Image 1 (cartoon, helix red, strand yellow):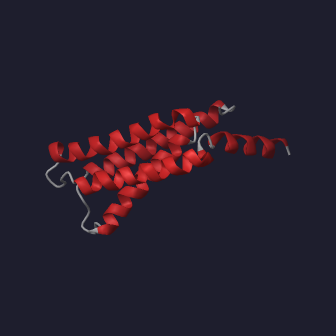
Image 2 (image 1 turned 30 degrees about the horizontal axis):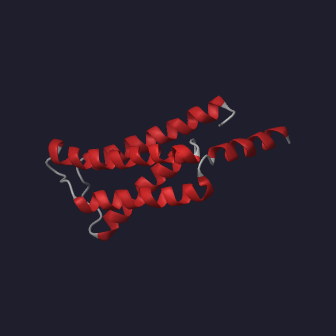
Amino acid sequence: MIARPGLLRAWKGAILLLTLAIVAGSLLPMPETATAGGLDKAEHFLAYCALALLGCGVVTRERLWIVMARCFALGLAVEGLQAILTTTRSADWADVLANGAGVLAAWAFAAAGLAGWARHVDGWLGRRTRA
């Protein structure tokens, strides 16, 4: 686990900020210069991949599935909220698939040895402050 409480709080804060950015970006009215087609799906993929990678930084390999399930559930919930709460957005199964693909890509990286990578950052920071 991360030895520095401040770093763990910062990490969790980054996860929360990215989650809020994803939710706000998904529910607020679409800007006039919004991306269309495949680029929109790439944005979904990258957003959920980044969120899942941040989340997997603070868990062990055995708990990866919890992070990935939460990220996927967020994607489903946001798409549902678009259908219910907005008149400028609509739920799209292709977005759900892009979100899920981003989560699966992060899971593949994490399962290959990236799980808990925040502790490596913690160790690196500890060595830098002692030097």
